[in-house]
Length: 443
Image (cartoon, rainbow, N blue to C red):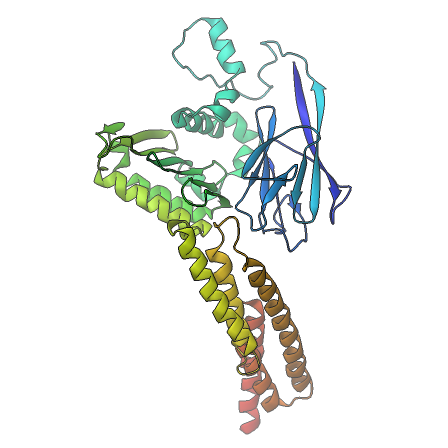
């Protein structure tokens, strides 16, 4: 048989000439330094798009980016990539290259690497040796493609908990606090469908602690949201404990009713695996059991807080109006930057708010460029003011002019009022020291 090695080659942009082989883990591209392909381009979102393998195929998924992802000049939410396809993001153009790699067919004796244990999924299709060997040889394909969440999660848990795999270091990739509590995996899907619209919400939590949400809303502007994040292990441990005590594992597997209106569907399906304990519950066209509803709402709130996707609950028109209002406040604060030291920081906060409102709105409204330009101008001005004010404060400190130093440092704290900002922390630390010296002088 043959397999493929997919490689992304940058033909245009800041990293022209670079090559990126696509691994099974996939590649994330964006402006953030944590991305696998990190590009310093203001036209890119921090996490702009993701390349992933689905079997032998390479796909690109837009992660609700501000300026969109294009394949062969066409805007996409996700697309199958073929050799020679051109993917454009910001100022960068990537070309898809694919190499055929001939591989020998493994014999049954060689199918399991030395030092690892067989993983056999009994699907109930027969007990003969040939069927068992076939199941072992092909069990990865159902993991990737099947819509049966139970099978996905059980297989994943089996692989994670396998002692031989742990000996090879796979456990090092798992959040340690979750390992103590029992590995947590989630698959939750909500579908609300009518003749006019389909809304689908999917939440997954991987063995490595990656929380991912996909939202498809076909009404209005046809919105598609893709977000993912590595979650703090302590938060996952707490979530696992909440699920254990929620009563979810005692629920029936299915609850089915009748649609209130013809040609409508309301369905929730949740699968949870904690350690070796797994359970699935599906509710269709009926009121949810209280414990199911409480857990479902908790998971939705958890994902919104972690991924910052609260805005999806509002209409495109509402979000656009909120963004326009935030832009108006930001512009006014920036124009009045000479009136009050903290106005530039206030402007930046309002620009960020406007960007947040439009995160799930595509295409962006015509004033989005004004938001981005204003945000960057305010950030540059804040950096400039900080450097100038820091110089004045440090000069006074070097001259042992403690009174002037205290005044300049207080101004610096007003320019950078965010106490979580490292620059505010540094100015505050210096101010405390200077005020102590002032007291010594007065005494």
